Every structure is written in structure tokens, then in C-alpha cells.
Image (cartoon, rainbow, N blue to C red; front, side, top):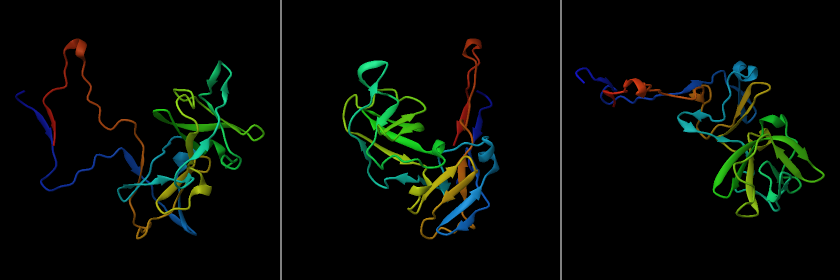
Length: 214
């Protein structure tokens, strides 16, 4: 208490505590700009968000607005009479064999939650897409049809401010917003899970105290 520690900005100084790393080396390819990131290709840097000049970008998505709809549920083989937590039935053309398929994410709005899934398998005959992991509740438990959209698809990168990443090649793709100069833009992708950790030991009575952040 006699020697508190204060972390503070200088007057009128803007402070940014960042858990991200700069993405550099952008090159123009038609309407898109690309950056090669070896760490992504090596699997040591995985991220699903991107900021350009301080603004969060939108993962390239299909459809651009609104949703696809799963009109009927897929039965859960382990829970007869209930819908699956790991598979959706799709309308022909909504789910395709985009490449690389393991980069594609399906965002499902189900009951009171939104869950994000990677694709394990596409059955075109029965029009069923199966995910690598389950949602916490059965799809369609409360309402049908079930809204969803697809993101991180290069074929869907058609709007300014959208981006996607190919984890196999390590290439990030981005379509600039009006006025953005990618030769000078600040591009940041997340790299840490935790930004600040204050750790004491309650059992020993060692509390985190007398710290101020201003």
C-alpha cells in the first residue's frame, strides 16, 4: 500500500495494448491484395480476425447478406427423435466443395446461440454437411428453418473490406476499402490468447493489489 504501481499514458497520448502482430509484404493481384505468411503455412500462427488501419475486417462470406437456410433437421443417430448437433441438410448449391475445404467455416444461428464449425464431409446425394465438432444444442431444437452462412471462402471475397486466409499456402487475401493504400496500411492479426495476466495465490494470501491502469 505504501508503494502502489501505476501504469499510465502520457497526457493526450493514445495507448494501444495489442495482442496482434503486423502482416506485411502486401502485393496486388487484380482487385485483391495478398500477403504470404510462412508461420500460417507452418501451422504456428492461426487466426480468424484481421484489422486494417484499426478497423476490423469481414471474413469473406457467402451469401454477402442474410443467410442460407436448412429446412429440415438431420436425425441424430445417438438420440432418436432429435436433430443432429453435428450435421445440417442443405439446399443444392448452398454448400460446395470449396478448396481448401478445411479452411471453410460454417456459422450456424441455432436457438439462442451462434456456433462456428469446420467441415468434415459433404454428402451431395443426401445433401448433408457434417462438421468436425458438435454444437452445444441440437440444430433445430427450437426453430426450423435453421439460418447459417459460410465464411473464409475465396469465392466469396467480392466486397471491399473482406478477407480470407489459406492455411495450406499461408496466403492472406484482402479487398481494400475505398481510399485504403495497402502499401502503407497497418494490418494486424491476433497472435496471443491472453493480453494481460494478473496472477496471485489465494491459498497463500498472496493477492494482486495496489495496481492501477490509467
